[in-house]
Length: 320
Image (cartoon, rainbow, N blue to C red; front, side, top):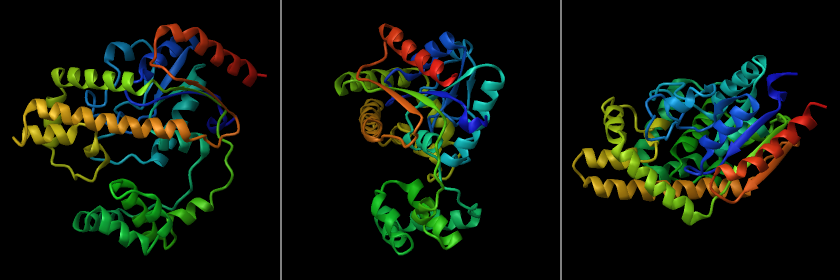
């Protein structure tokens, strides 16, 4: 059985829903390895701002792909998927259950549904696309993309810089629209997966987000942001779009008060969580070997018997 076919557990949910605590409980119950599926926790420069699990928790079970790459690099869904398949195979080789944890829908979809195989795009073409975006702005750049890939331009919002630039660079480098590459994708069954999805009531989730951001500001987020911003990396890099970084940057530049930065970061995070919530609620995943348990509540230990029973039944079925 290849690493792509290995049974896995997926724990998904919007930010601040309790995914990391649930993952640790599952890992300790089922001798698991926790594999990060959050697009920002993959960057080593972002520990506090991304609410990466603290070191004492990470010592209780193997954790993989946290702080994997430098903020000066880009981690696409395809690159993450390759990392994840390696870690899934590694976990199985160690007799452990792979547990994918995150709220990045594109990453989870890449693993469970597959991803189009696209030829490598030269760095100079990507750089050209980024410079054009910086010069034109989101709306005008999307109109330029429409001439190359009208389907992608019609689907992507003007604010989704990373995916707009990606679609443009692919079309320029290959002469084939990204949407056409995706149509060519071969059928993909995906690994057998048991997905536990946490979808707390919005008011509960937003209150937890606000409280967590306040703790972050007191616990080193400002210093972490200052260190990252001091590197003067391209603002188009994914890590530079971390939720809260822009707001803290304005405070450090003297453009607003610390309290105003906190309030703005809380609002931005709530909006981000709303997008995650909507995606996880409505995206069915295409994997034919997927079982899903949706829990419309914040994680608490009282949920563990139901969750453990769900996972145990899945593993018994897949082992037969």
